[in-house]
Image 1: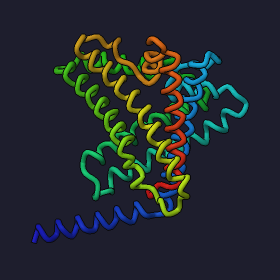
Image 2: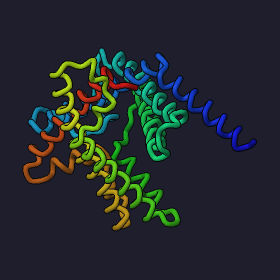
Image 3: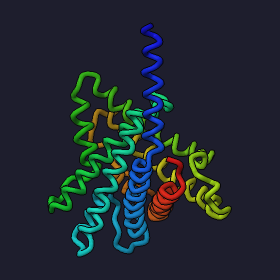
Image 4: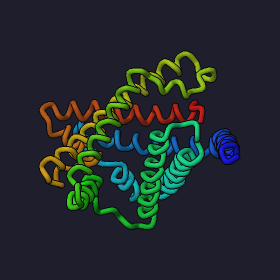
Length: 276
């Protein structure tokens, strides 16, 4: 009796999840959120490319990139649009984590993590709109967090585990780049042959750039754990500066910057053609 009731509850939960996934408003949340995500990565890529070319750009994270436009006359309008977009993305991922019973636990945990990241990004943009400048970069936040966790019992192991997870996420981006499995979620019937071919190529380049960035961030976090030194931790801005500081750094930074621009374009393709 109890077993049958549990099965009935599970069946209803799956049905509710399918209704949410296929609802018009969730579809709009996802597409708006993906467009905002595209804009944020595109801006980081443009600034990094400017630095690589010696044209006055800088190596920064997404919050820092958005801060660069906050002083423009049109900046507030763009920031408001992006704040709503990031909030939409966070809500979409939160719903997927809560109701998408057809996905595995690990993937749903990943959705929840993205929801938290984009909720924090939304809060950061709101602060910019209100005129509160963020004085700390992603690297500084990473070092503060690593320092706090390193002082916990087994803190060194926790920091190392976090770094390895980021390295794993980077390698998974590389796997997706080479297999182009992201196309499985595209409504390819609505795409022209050229859109599908170039969409796949752009996605591959963008995901490879994300692989480089994630592996760098994760690797330095592992180094912080091994050396018990939180100053070794870096964020996206630190990863880009690390590339710029290498031999042929301008070229390396330029390649990754182009990759981040490609990832932004890939997010736009997702916003248009992804089956959400």
